Image (cartoon, rainbow, N blue to C red):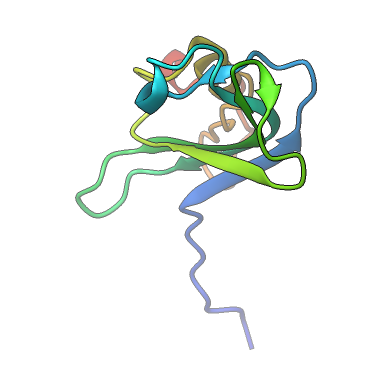
Length: 120
């Protein structure tokens, strides 16, 4: 019996560890100097347009909470969530999204194309 299941991928998620990434300031605590996250993990989700929703990118950054230049909670990491991006995100994180843009395919039976979605 032929496979009659229709598969429609809606997103691509990539998750990776980072070292040496720039410090992410917390907009809620800008009055406190040197407060934010030292990233250790990044998760990017590229969602395709479907129904009445446009394509989107979201990110989660996990890392150590730093306050006044010092590790605030040495046994517990924190997360920051970014949506509707990458406009308005920290530049480093916005640049990360461009490194991992999903590759578009011309059609399911044709050869794949490379480059960013804006190039097709």
